[in-house]
Length: 391
Ligand SMILES: *Cc1c(COP(=O)(O)O)cnc(C)c1O
Image (cartoon, rainbow, N blue to C red; front, side):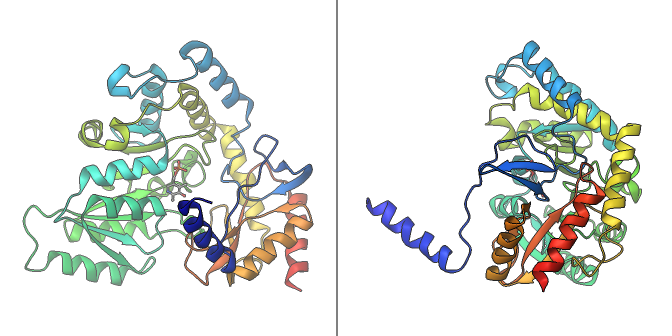
């Protein structure tokens, strides 16, 4: 063993002891409610493909057509070798979908967060995050060099106290203050009080960025997301999200003013210094947005809501007012969560055990995600298995 391998092995052994070791599970089938793993068919409750669009014929056909017309790879960054038409079509559709002036797409949601926060903020600025925001926002905030403050999850008093502190005597005139939250939280499934947060940011002269990764396609009229549903979209300076969850494709986006988008094209390093995504992904995302806004999208959302309604609150840690597709079953210790996921796999059900650092230590959980492709029978199978492993 090289000394690198020895050092890494020691660290991996520590992860194993703490039940935090992770490994990839090879899947030999397309995404869907049933997947092939190790020669077995598992009922799948792990995907963020909430509307079941990832394997939809319209998305696949759009992707194939784009490959035929525009090739398999983009060749370079969009600023270097020209910007392929599918990205422009996608950005027009996204801006219309989110009712903003403009949109910019990135290779992933992670890259969107990284590029945006580091472009907007610098040393001397202040970035204020909900305690439960996604790792990409935490990483982006750190990389930006801005002073980072965290408020307790969805706690408006705590947020207001930090805003007061930010505005206290020492705030320089050019110090920018940006609040970042998710609209539907990825590991808890609850929603942020966006109206109240927008009121606070206006009161204190801050900006706000909302990550709608788990709400886009799922919540609001035509699946436009929570900001649109609460009629605050026009007051949110930066709306971001992913094309890889309910929209069934791949990539990240930022929606906002024309000026914001022009600025990001010039300053977002994860956009500038990265090869454009494959055109097939953009074309599939366009088809995904179309379906999300169609009658079919509406009926898929209805199916999703009706499945979520079948979940008794006591099965997951799900309050009745939660409306997304995410059902956390918080078990506490990493050992219990891993054992529960293994017991479900024994029954041919795939639900991931979510552990540190995705959630806090001691807050390990099963994270069940429902999709419009599940049936009521699938759900009954899951609920029965969960009841069994609880006893
Ligand atoms: C998945 C996710 C992202 C990252 O999006 P990708 O396209 O998967 O990189 C960003 N924010 C939240 C809240 C997410 O859940």
